[in-house]
Length: 607
Image (tube, rainbow, N blue to C red):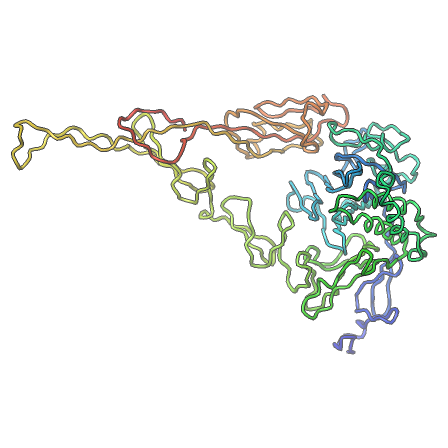
């Protein structure tokens, strides 16, 4: 046994490694150039990462395709960034959609939301957060982790997304997708000259025609040429030129021979001039960071940030007297986090700058919500909200109580937790919801029951007492008198029609059958209850939820019996995936109060 650098006794083959005068623990990882190296028995074991192809979208419409073709496209819509559903192929595995919205007032647009469609699962990056929609446990194996200023999503189909939570998205693909990709990121065939292939498989010569062909909704207006922002906002040009000259300065001199700075300088100039409405006015910093990232991809690390130029204050995350957090301009290997307990990543990705912790052995996991090193991790729900062990977790399922445990979120059924919704009001278990009468003199009480259903009890209403004759103990003024005693009449209840839309249902996949059949009968066979006679129906494509189906150029039947779409009736690759919902109506009391009238007028209540 020997002492390590922390004065702890370890086996001799667990001694630390030395590099540039710095000691590293046994099994610790570092980057040497673009190579990941691991400390093992006082020696560095280095592995060269397999090649990944990269597409980048940053700032105000600046694209670099997988085949390294640069262009500018400013469209205000959702666009297909990359997908392997190309041409007549119906056997794709993913789609990456970017939602571009205006940034500034000069016609430029920025990517603000990224959606990834894998199987029936949708992964969404928006407003600085990650969330999933329609995913079942284990359906799409992926990991999500904070890597410096980036959110890193690795999907086990060979797809990686690196997002700076603002306007920069980096898409990486493994070599298995070569010659199988289409969209704004090009066709990934090794030749940038033929990247401008439209959705209709036509090779075009300009970015506008190419970009417009990949919009998701046909209702969006086509993008048009916009004037040079520095010409429109000429007062900003000199200041922008001065700031952006950082890219061509001595600071990046080591990178100039590897990555041409000219297009990045021009992009910086344009974005800085166009950034005139606040909020996203870190356009300059994003533009310079994009060049620094390109240098890192070429294995050249540049420490360009300063306290005055786009600073990152990592000391913010250090609490008390701690000094665990530091800025690393060229990234850090895969970390153990509460989203990635093993600290293993499918691909080691250098160059992801930002703030990184050195978590101590007694607190080895980074909790990415509080940005603290912890000994025990809690749970993340579907929206990415973090809960500490022992905390209650809100449940979308009725009659459930959920808690965060060391094994994850655990939910149990409790009938006392059941709630009922009636006329927009929420009732607790066993609480009286309403009272009413029928036309046969019967009374009905409805209470909130198990599973959110109403339990009704029918009984005979109190009727008006018969006229009786009583013999008073004191002689009455009349020799033949009678006293009428009556109870209040039973309540008369007004009813009204109440309608509500069901959830959206998507139970069949057109790629696995003859088409898409979201019918009432099919739903029932899958245990989904729909009202007997829907009053209306709505149908939509899951990929184009805001586009009316009549504009999708598909032959689809959408009736109150459900949706029917046959693959043979469509152009290749067949039916889109559709979902339906139904409008269900019933008659209910106008309110929950008993109302008495001088005379009882029977009213039939429809239940």
